Image 1 (spheres, rainbow, N blue to C red):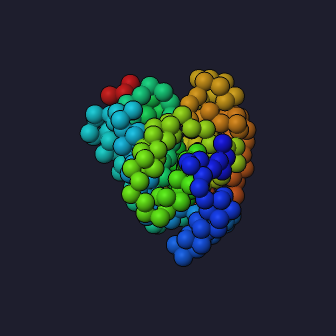
Image 2: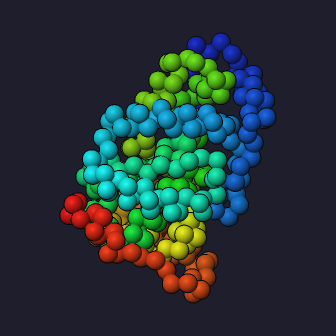
Length: 277
Ligand code: ZN
C-alpha cells in the first residue's frame, strides 16, 4: 500500500503530488535524517507532525495503558530528558512514556512521542542500556521514520488534508487509528540500522557507555536467539539481532571513547525499576 491514493480520488494523483510539494515547499524541505548527514525530502511540516503525534498518543494510550508507577515514569522521562538536548531535532519536545505490557518493546510516534514497555525495562540491567534504547527511538524521530510510514499508510490524499489544516475529523481519526498500530509496526531494515547509528551517537554525546546497546542486544539473543522471531515492534525487524550487534560494534568504533569515563548507572537503574522484578 505504499503511496496508495485513497479517498474518492477526485484529484489526479500528479496534481495532488504537485499541490503537496508546492504547499510543503514553503514549510518544509530537505532535512537531515541520517546519523552521517544523509538528507531526505519531508512533506509533513513539524506542526502537523506534532498534531499527528498528539492524535496517535491518544490512540496508543487507549490501547496500551501507561504504567501507574509515578516514580518509574518520572525516572524514564528524566533519563530521556538528559539525552534530548543532544538530538539533532530541536523542533520537537520529546516525551517518554512507560506502557504496562510484558511484551519487550519500544517505539516512537510522530512528533517526539517515545514509548517503552515495563517488559523492556524488566529485561534491562542498567541505565546505559535504557539510554541506548531511548537514543535509538530518538533516532527514529530524527529520521522522521514514523511520520513517513504513516504518510504511506494513510495515503497522500489524507496527508494533503492534514497539511492543508483540514478540520476533517475522518482524516484525523485515521491518524489516531494508525497510532495504535505503531506498537506492532515493523521498521524497514535501513531505518533500524539508521536508528541504531543515531542511538550510538546520542548515547555517546550524553556521556553513556554505548556498549549498553550491545549488552541489551545480547540479552535479547539469550532470550529469543539471534533472529528476529518472537519480538514486536522495535525488535521484529529484518536485520536480525546478530546483524545489528555487528553493525553497532562497527558504529561504536567510529567514536573516541577514551576521553571520559562512560556512564553505566547500574545501581540507580535497578532501584528505579525494582518493582518490576
Ligand atoms: Zn527501531
